[in-house]
Image 1 (cartoon, rainbow, N blue to C red):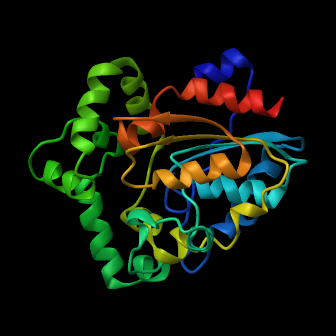
Image 2 (cartoon, rainbow, N blue to C red):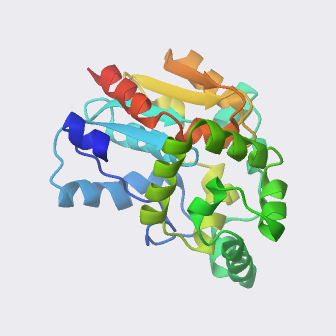
Image 3 (spheres, one colour):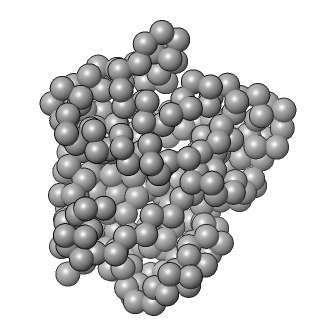
Length: 263
């Protein structure tokens, strides 16, 4: 936020369902989000002119939906870090689905006994989102390692090599990220994560900036490669820092590149 003040840039950071005290909407797709969530926010904030949009990880398809919904007259540039594209494009382009092939829907994750039990169990392990950026011990360490085997080594490297930036990221997460167990499950639900309800190829005449990791275990690197080649996007490739490092590090430089792309 300090960067925004220095650059005289107004930033709005809406949450997606289940985060930031927002409401989960079982049975819908990401394509609904700009209409149901963003249009009311923009109206309330009196945003009438053009803007740039950014999205990180699971936020990247939400940013794509934003660009598709509002079009190039409103969205002057789109920035994505460790991006993910939906099932239809992945299958047509021969790209992997990555770790996203979950076997439950947003409805079952949020309205069934399974959803409530799994949600509570998940949040018991990661009640503090910023805790994922530390070096956990005990059963939490085992849990994180089961999610992503290389994450602990990456976190150690990040904390050693980027201590100041990591401190800032943790502070921001502790202050602004609120979620429920059902919110986390919603992120991985098949209908939400895989079936976006739109096609990223619908984006026209909008400059893209894409940063991705060549060792990403969550969002396949090939998704980033495809987006860069398809949209002739300005890009940066991280190596040795996995999904987490490419998602968080050097974010002010990323924002500057997105603003430059819009000019």
